[in-house]
Image (cartoon, rainbow, N blue to C red; front, side, top):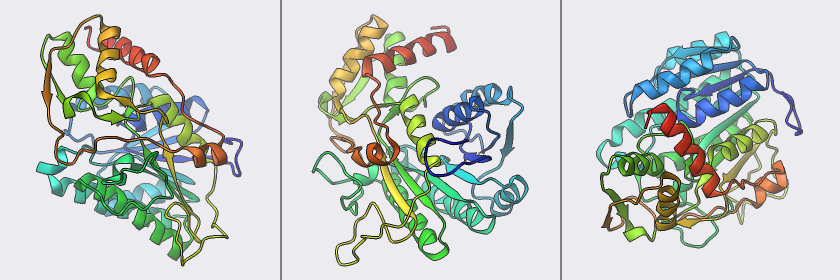
Length: 344
């Protein structure tokens, strides 16, 4: 598949293929006629039935092959790389969730660190041409200067989840430097849309409002998030997949740029570039549902940040793309899917 960038790829391995973003990306690639190799362990962090139903949809296409393995299983992961011979890998498998990391920290070390190391080793030893991996807007942590830029320092995470994502960026850079493995990290900003994760705000709020249950509104509704629709995320990923990162010839070790390197390594934000308050987000859900939420206002939770806002100038310059799906449109599509899927 060519994306109008600088190389053509043919076989894609997607980790976390049964997950929210992995499902949508795999579906997009299959529609483009590409063989997709999916990896997922179908864990029970949230309802496995949702993951199984995503897989059923993907499996209708004969070009989709699936391996139920855990990223922490070194031998199994190497076996998939050896047998499937992907030329590009998109690592979307991760233990997600900021609040869950407060009570289950070891799950993040196992999947996000040990598992990612196995992916890096597979890419290194099996001739992968490009590793694209999911990072997160959470790496900006205690930063307050906005919009968040990939050229800003991000050394102050405020959750273990964020720390593991920052670690992924560092690990990938090391492999890019040592083994010239082209690596591109993508910092996703609050992804939402149909087939989304049940632990995320849009899903939680929609279910609670329809069931006449109260919703918890953190930071008294003043939190701001750069909500980014799933189709925009996938478009950004696909464009970056087809663009091999090149060393930055102007990289200065006296004034190191965090977003580039002398190695074939790049970091990009993928966000809507238009943060909205949590209060407005809830109002939009209420409008789409035709129901008013019962709200319980609460303080900011440990590990959360008050605002996120993506600078996407690098993405626009290099990939010719800027996310732009309006919040009203994206939420309406989610509500339509939710009502159909749950017969709500």
